[in-house]
Amino acid sequence: MLRPGVIELNVITFDEVVLRSRKPAFVDFYAPFCKYCKELDPIYEQLAIRYQHQNITIAKVDSYGQKTIGERYQVEGWPTLKFFDGTGGPPVDFKWMRGLETMSEFIDDQMSKLALAPMSFPPISMSSKPNLAELMKSKPCV
Figure (tube, rainbow, N blue to C red):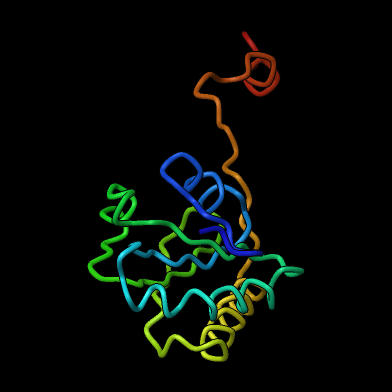
């Protein structure tokens, strides 16, 4: 069930929202039948409300039903929580108690690391063909 502030992802939306958005995301990989996932739901909803006006996406994905996503990120149990930086880089696993304060501290820590990281720019396209005009200037014909 969709929670206020929590974005429900699937195979179609995951890459766009989490990997290519250039916006950090904290993702709950869950299974619908998982008791611990259901216990986490109200806490995760509070987390989404806490961060709703900040530059981070709080999302969840049914990695049992969307097996390819779970396999891609080696989800072996539920719930599994991971922080993504929004650039397609590897996620950072959340490995602490699943409480509102510990998750908030983790997110804040990851966000501060992003703020300190040097800004990355898209690669510059380099042509393999030399510029004829430049060659003519540098090597005049004799």
